[in-house]
Length: 327
Image 1 (cartoon, rainbow, N blue to C red):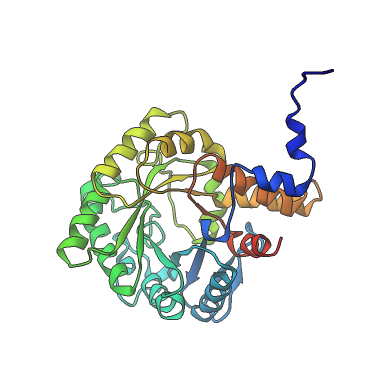
Image 2: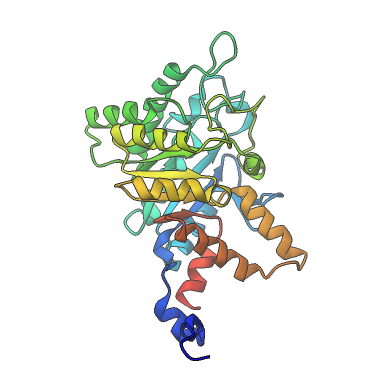
């Protein structure tokens, strides 16, 4: 057997495997999505996402401190208004006293110097029809009218202390409209995380419970079709031209080919969102004893990093960060 190549030599011990590992996973790579709900006095667990909560302002602060102490890279905040506060325009999204902007101020005050405070800049949680924009007379999402609302929302979030705005609505021209408005308002340091490739996905289901979505119909007219690959590069190029500071692929695990394509072409950092359905699948299988929970979580996160993500949004961010600090 002389002359045989033996790659297994470098897999023999944990120390050897660690030495030659091509992909690293560190706490700083992880971002924790968080939900703050109006009217809560204590956190409320989300039924389809065991271990994830809608937070009160107090529990939001506590969870944020825990995440920062674990070393996570950032916090992405979503707001959940009271049902009676929703309207066709999503007015609470830009109201200074709206729950999302109150939550952003709380995070900025509590941990703002120690982490990156990110805001979801989208209307879907705040509209009574559940779409990511305002509707025209025919009931379709009006792209350009929606941009005006995104601008108002972005300025309110920047005023509330957000470092990074997540443009998740998939409206044409959203990054450029927000960048121009921020610059005109003197908010040149506020960065934009562009959802460059956001696909219409069945894996969003648990998220809609998390934000108490009022969606009627679907979002296929503005989110990308799962059958398309080249289109994501077109979207990427448009967002880069309009001033995106970071670009994102969402979902992550079912779109690793898209993530690789984007990472190969992007001159700016690339993020990927391990979404609610991905979280819930692993959680449910682990609860039934079908898979090793910790191993599956870390393998899935490493796979997303290996595919090209510099940043991974995951509901396991705090827990995984603790494991990585103390393996």
